[in-house]
Image (cartoon, rainbow, N blue to C red; front, top):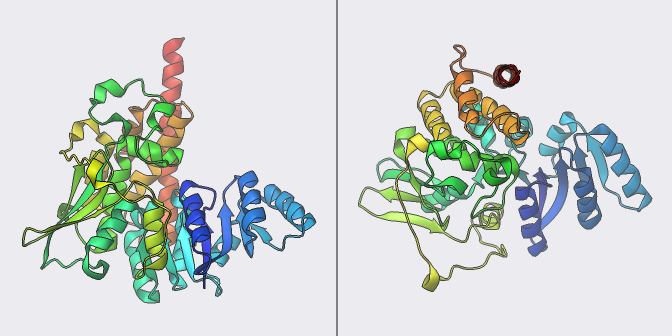
Length: 396
């Protein structure tokens, strides 16, 4: 029986993980859950699963939840704050940590789980995008088992012998991308896109931030950077291919001409189940493919339609400080778009201006990563504020 901690249990990955755990009660025990601000959903999860621990970022919400669960006779210990979050991630009782906190906020607790030598199910792109070399050094030192959960990275892992990249045998990694809800549209056609339209992904059910990243294709650029660190390759050893059906999740092309692909319905429970139980296989609840009805299309990418992806590819080639700045600026810009403060097309402009704002030095410690992340966020927010002031002045 493996004890599981879910960092980010109220998000889409967290909910899918809970579903997989519930299907395999003889193998896994839910030990802990955490949330940022969704107190109502966290309370319902405590009532349903009654884990040992629950953490929520909001102190007032934590007190309220704690009173309610005690009154109901539930023994779950309700905690608050980043320190408790990190302490649970490295707790001796935990066997598996699902790292599903969206954004740079997930970096420190995920790193803590790695340093403690846990099996870490990595759904947080930013841990590797922002701190790739430091993160992988920690994995090596602690002998933690790092299992990729993103459908693309999990697919690559499954297509490689024992999840290891061998440059003597492999020609290319082929990273597939659906193209999001605006595939086939020109850059100019997207000027009036609303947050609702950007979040309406044709294949996947995801949170708002990830959905917008899929629409801009920034998510694919972040995934490429993450793949470089996960598999020890350079960005020019990875190609991105549009595949609108999201059935082939990624491929590995070998030097003898063979291409091995991992396929399945677009449902995150498949990679979650794989990462939980590897090298064994366990039930995920996902429907099997019906090959009699299957249609697969592939095409190249018009990078002029996806300026965020182009910026991410440049950052992947430069590495150093650029991925940290790219990710921080993108998080601020996407949040501003969701709040209708900037347009869809202005997301890429804010990110580009932040990247070009100054010469950032490469961080050599986690503290420097966090400081650089904060600096880039301030710059990006300042650009957004100036942009809004300019628009107001133009109307007067």
